[in-house]
Image 1 (cartoon, rainbow, N blue to C red):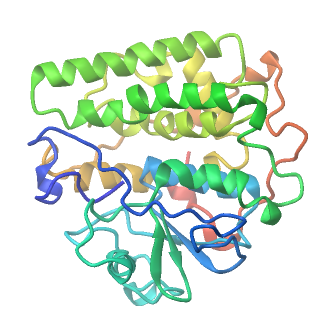
Image 2: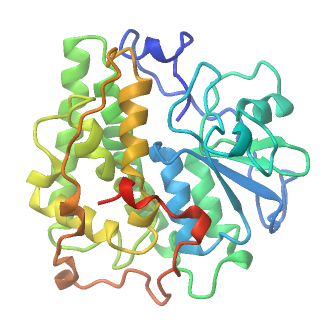
Image 3: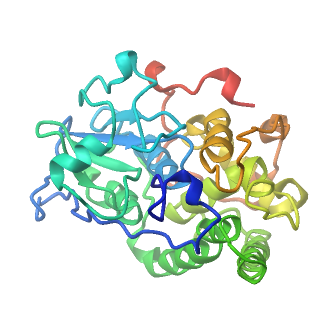
Length: 341
């Protein structure tokens, strides 16, 4: 998620036709280092915002694969200013590893006057302080397939080769209509534009519900990248997309199948333990001043339902396949209890 997808800062949201910026820095960190960035423990730093669904994909993937020791983590303040993501959660307002106040400094070290804004997730090369990639679509796929030498013992296969065609097909539909569809609805500048996007969101959600009514996960009988990508939108749905983005035909809690599916994933180690509802709500309602000029953050919704039984295990499935759940969240990365159900 970048500071903006236009040129006029946060106030531009909802005042011009929404178009998501493509990642400008698409270098890949690979086992063979073909782009000049070889997989290497302790070399890179993953910069995220817990508010951002695109960054949240990398948080879930990193946890499930057990890459915490190999790929360090920087968490940006959910509230941006006009220089975008900043490290004001850290002592002295600087990232303790990169030594910078703004993520834009790593972008500028890589390329001055770069297009596309400053977005997360971003991977920074620690020795040089330069951005490596902000390609949110490719990043988690590479964590699953290129970083295997550094995966924990028992790490799941999140992108199994035999299912990749089906996973890719499902993810393409989820991206177009759900992941990005909620933004096209929320930032629409006219009634027809909004209605088309909103209708597309719920049409796709209903198709996904029909699919998930008979199987525990989107593809195969284990968690895959497809589930991660749908989860990061669903976990934000009632908190911000239903009200703030006007995707309000129904709430997630009103759809028995999707609500059960989302709770199942939330309660799976590696998913819910990366979610910070306080960061999510404050970011959307306080940063998007073009559609919420008062910056008032609503008190609801009630989060306690996320911890209720879901009974999805009755459909079978093996969450981690032949692998095992990730271990406890390390102390420095735990979401504050006040920001969780």
